[in-house]
Length: 281
Image 1 (cartoon, one colour):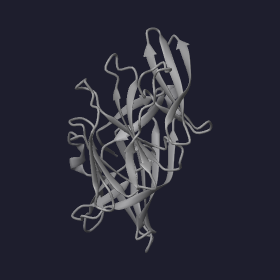
Image 2 (cartoon, one colour):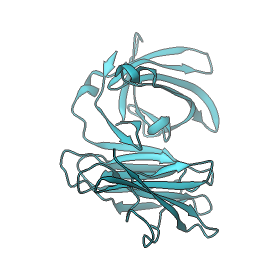
Image 3 (cartoon, helix red, strand yellow):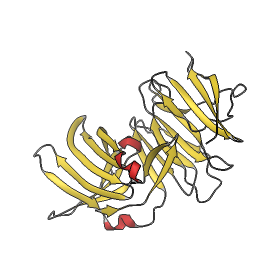
Image 4 (cartoon, rainbow, N blue to C red):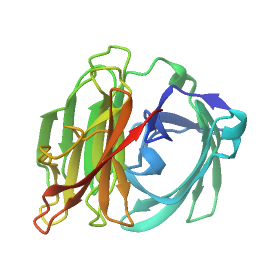
């Protein structure tokens, strides 16, 4: 088993695994090959790029299993990933991997055309200190950003157009910007959020969300709602309630936790619905 650098965050009491791109190499092959694997939470936004090649190959999540049974004994979560490799619109192979905190295990690639299985492991140089750069491939757009050292966002679309933006960045030099892939407006298309700790005690996360517009095939920054009736004046600790199709946010004020609920109107505008207060921890 090999180790890599990663970082963990807690959003609404749920552990989310964040990892930078990792470099894998073949094991016991006459001619070694290497590839960079990029992926987000739940394995979404994934792609591979083989060393020496310019093209990137999209990966579609075939299976993702989060095993939390060890939490009661203070043991780390197990993340089981399985992706289908897509070339010319067809499945050409399958990647599998187990991640336990900073451990990568049981990594493999099976090629469909001859059913050959390649065993993979972390390349030795992947143990070096991370540079913070990260990338996703989402709806055909290549998304580039940095968790640690700058606030630049670059989105490169399939038609050659580019979008740049400056993201909010942590005030604390020891903090990292996180990213989450999730369908925030319930339209069936994954969106992209970036989070940083609040500027006070750092007990909750502040969200900047980019919604994917399937008609325009572009990511558009979510316009924040009117906070005049809200308990929290930010998109903080955002969670998705798919059953009710609402976004719930939370922040701390004094000894109480406050929760706001929002929904999208027919014009796609985020509107306040209700607020609640919870005392104590």
